[in-house]
Image 1 (cartoon, rainbow over the protein chains, first blue to last red):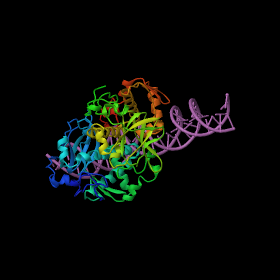
Image 2 (tube, chains in turn green, red, purple, orange):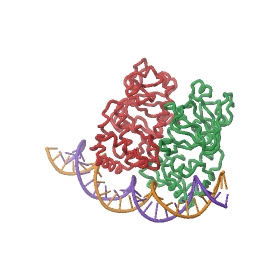
Image 3 (tube, rainbow over the protein chains, first blue to last red):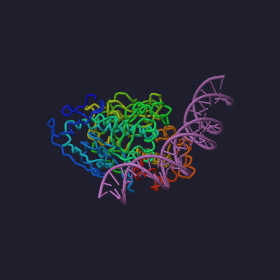
Image 4 (tube, chains in turn red, green, yellow, orange):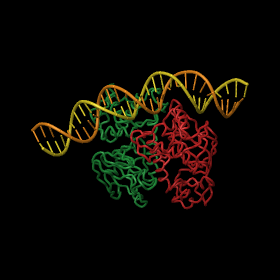
Amino acid sequence: MTACNTSMPSLAAACAACQGDDPCLPCSLTASGDAAGLPLLARRRVRRGEALFRDGDPCRSVYVVRSGTFKSVLTGPDGHEQVTGFQLAGDLLGLDGLAHGRYASAAIALEDSEAVVLPYARASLSHVGDLHELLPRLLGRELVRKQKLAVLLACMSAEQRLASFLLNLSRRLQVRGYSATGFHLRMSRAEIGSYLGLTLETVSRTLSALQERGLLRVSGRHVELVDRPALVRVFGPPSSRRRGAPAGILLHA
Amino acid sequence: MTACNTSMPSLAAACAACQGDDPCLPCSLTASGDAAGLPLLARRRVRRGEALFRDGDPCRSVYVVRSGTFKSVLTGPDGHEQVTGFQLAGDLLGLDGLAHGRYASAAIALEDSEAVVLPYARASLSHVGDLHELLPRLLGRELVRKQKLAVLLACMSAEQRLASFLLNLSRRLQVRGYSATGFHLRMSRAEIGSYLGLTLETVSRTLSALQERGLLRVSGRHVELVDRPALVRVFGPPSSRRRGAPAGILLHA
DNA sequence: CGCGCTTTTGAGAACTATCAACCGGGGTGG
DNA sequence: CCACCCCGGTTGATAGTTCTCAAAAGCGCG
């Protein structure tokens, strides 16, 4: 793990979820609110299946996942759900509410989870280190991620989407101190499919196919990445990418 | 056009590109840099095919399109391009550079264009009204747009993608004072396809099909939206959406 | 222990990509 | 001035991927 080059020296210590050289909200924030002389930050416990907030709710805070897993979902009038993201410990939630003052998506806990509340009133924000400083960078990072997701959806095959998803998840778990090769999916096939623009059957079938080829092993929601290089090579031959997608624009990179 | 509820009263006047109730960078900014007591802002002229900036360039400014049209593109090592967006007058460019200090995408002019430079040094930004205040909202808005694009790519058919694209373009042109029913496409079929995750052949075919059904008329790059209600109805029957996509999550909404 | 939900697997259909040929306009150069 | 070429767009035939519908198996949970 590389150093955290955030502009918040008071929060820079003990940054465990800092990925690469990106600025980040250090884990110290999620671990103990009053560390480094910060004011105590409220937390919210959310049980599996419950919502941290719903789309349409007025946005008065953004959140940092402290523990557990969330999914971000858009809900249509007909009740159908579209998953727009999965958030692990250290990830931000609710940034899309900054646009119009109302959350654009709901945050649902995929297991019993906890989140730190970052009130978005200007006065409160100034208290939280240089969050005000940092916010554009964090938002920019989310923007880049959504952009990568859009590219993935625009030009990757089902197999490539799944490989990208698993490699991305693997890396994020590793950064948090979990195994990079064996892990437990907290989301259903249907949720994965919704996120990746595939049906749950295609997700299941594609996982089976990857297993058949010896790239990984799946048993229900447990996944073992057996042959990581081969998984990366799924994107390899430029001709295997649909519509000449730029390489290196991958979720896991 | 509704009122511009920006928090920048000094810039709120003469806001022509303000869409709906979103906060915006008023056209006054793009029209005359020194209006409302602002410092003169630099402009850059970019000729058709030229780059305002390229991916990888250090990000020291964001831009507002003053006139013309741009495309945002990611370029792979193999030279293939992936279009990630189209920007018209008043739209922002370069926000994805705020993440890591380097632009994630290049901005290429689709016609002779001009852009206002907003230096991103803190000192400079403070000069530009409350841009510092406004930035999170603008970024949030971009985030929501990219999210909608991802949803579109995840669960819409080719026909729905095209309809969404055209309706969105129509609305944006209308807001800028152009005809909402007849307009000129500044981008090629290949660029549209790249953006929408389709091949250029499918774009062409789908446009022909929509014309065949009398929903629009196309001749090269000229488009006439003949039956707008029918175009909206393309999304209508929930069963016609792939994978139960949430309605109302459309680009043109 | 049975019920419901998730997952797997199959067969067929639908959609879109791919390959290929053709058309048309605009600019270039003879 | 005209022929030619190049580029963008259109259209056709075909193949491939993914969706849809369907049934059965696995698993957790009351």
